[in-house]
Length: 368
Image 1 (tube, rainbow, N blue to C red):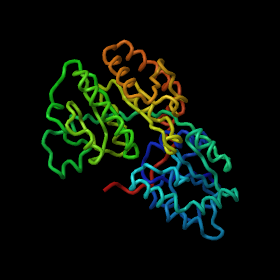
Image 2: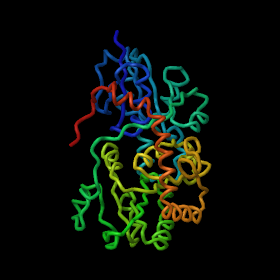
Image 3: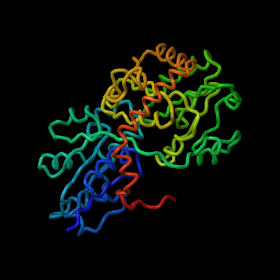
Image 4: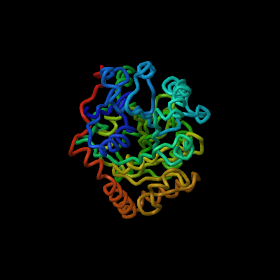
C-alpha cells in the first residue's frame, strides 16, 4: 500500500508553509493539502496519515468517530495555545469564538485520543512543548520559505478616493491623513503587520508611532489593521493603513521594496507566551531590520545587535532605537545583512520544498 499523507487546513496558511510543508518533506512522500470540506475516500483513511493544521473541523471528526475507521496516524499541529481556553483572555471575541468552534469544543474527544495513544500532538514552540508535556508533543521548528516571484505593490492597490465597496474588496484602506500622500525625501519606512489577535500590541504601538512621526519628519508608517483597529491611527500623518489579506497575497505584498524597520512587540499574556518566531522571517523577507520584545520567543532566533534588536517593553527605548536606526544606514545594512544570512542558513529544507515540489496538488475549494 502506498503511503498517503493529508494536511487538513482551513485555507493556505503560514502555519503549513513555515512548519508542516518542510516537515513532511523529510518523509519523502508527497502530501495532499485538503480544505475542511474536501475529504479523501473513506477506504483510503485506514492507510493514511492525517495532519490537522490547528483546527479539527466537524466533518472530519464525524468521519474519525465512526467505529472501526481510524487512520494509520492522526496528528494535530498547533502553533498557538488552542487547547486551553483560559489562555484566550484578551483576544477578540470573534477570534475566541472561532477557536472554540473549531478546536475548543473538541477538547474532550481530542484528550481521549491522546490518552489512548491514538493521536499525536505536534507543537510550534518550546513553550507549548513544555505546557503539554503530558502528551509527549513533538516540537516542529519553523523554516523560512522562498518568496513568490511577483510582488504586489501598494501603488497598484491603493487609490486616493475609494468607495465603501472598493475598500471592502481591496487590501489597502484610504490613508487617515491627506499628508500621508505627500512624498518625503529619503523617507524611512516603518511598518507593523500585526493581526487582529494583536489588539494590545496595536494600542501600545499607536502612541509610539505618534511620537516618532512628530520627532522625525522622514519617517513614514505602514500598518496592517482592520477598520476598528485603524481608528486608533486616525489623524496620524504619513501613515498608510493596509487591510488584512490572505496569506498568499501577503507573501507577495512583502516583496514590495522600500521597507526599512519592522516592529514585532509582544506584550505579556498567556497566549503570547506560546507563540512562535515566524515574524522574524517575515520582517527579514521584507528587507527590513526587526525590533522584537526582549524575553519573548524571539530570543530563540534573534541575536541582539547582530541580526535584530531585542528590547524591553519600554516605549521610550523603542523610540530611541528607531530614531538611531533611521539616521544610521550602515547599522541598518549590517543588521539586515546578518539577518538574511541567518535566514538563508535555515532555508535548506525550504529550498528543497521549492525544487522538488513534493507538496502535491490541493483539494481546497476554489476561491469565489
